[in-house]
Length: 60
Image (cartoon, rainbow, N blue to C red; front, side, top):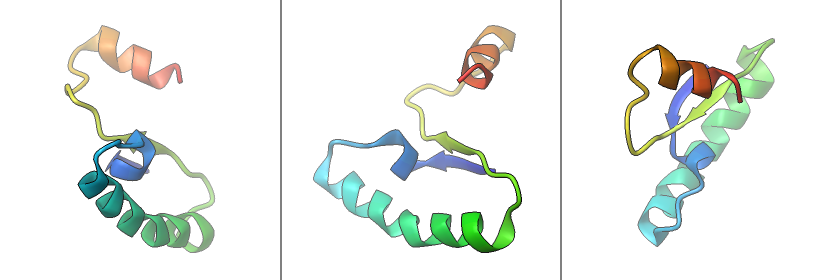
């Protein structure tokens, strides 16, 4: 599982896009060489705290 991924969040800011692009080789490595199953959670503006918010996140 990759948590708080900028790449998965698809940022609009040029600075954050640059940082997100730096994650891509690491994500590809984790997905291709180290994981049989794969999940990626995007960086979120607000932490999903509580059963309702975590349930919504898990439903995607």
